[in-house]
Length: 193
Image (cartoon, rainbow, N blue to C red; front, side):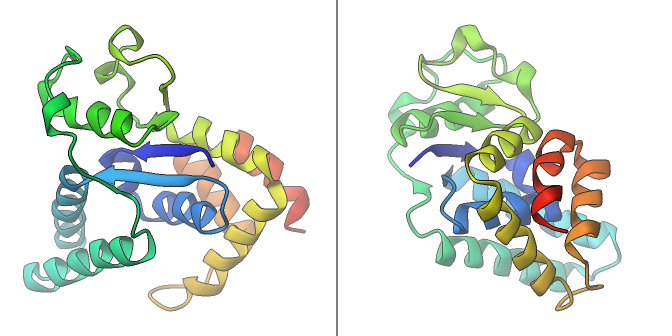
C-alpha cells in the first residue's frame, strides 16, 4: 500500500484533513506522521478554535480530542526513531528535517505539504516525492474513484454532528473552491450523482 507522510499544514484545514484521512480509512493509502507533526497540529488546531471564538480551555480539549482520535484510528501512523536522521538532509529550514526523516523511516513515497519551497527536490531522498495536497488528492482518487466517493459520502454522513450537514456535492464544491482540488473533484463527481 502506498505510504504518504502528511505534514502539519496538510492536516490543519478541517475538511481537507477529513477528506484525506477518510480516503485512508477506505484503504487508498496509509498515512504517517511524526510526534512533532501531531504536536504542531494540536497547537495550531487550538489556536484556530480560539481565533473562531472558542474559549482557550475548550479549544485545548477539542484539539487534544482530535489528536487522540487520529492516534486511535491510525494507530500505525506514528513514525518513531527518526531523530538520528534529523539534520542530514540540508533543508532550508532545519525545523522541517523531522518531516523528511520520518518519511524515510516510514518508507513513504510522498511527503504531502503546502510548503514546497521548504522541501527542494535536490535535498529529498530518491523515491520520495513532495506533493501539494491537491495533487496528492488527485493521485489518490485516481487509484479508485468509487472508494474515494465512499469517503466523501462518509464525510457527508458525519457532517451534521458538529456543524451544518453537508451533501456530497457541497463537500466537492468546498474541496474545489477552498483547497483547489479541481482535478480530484472532477474525478469524483460522476460517482456522486
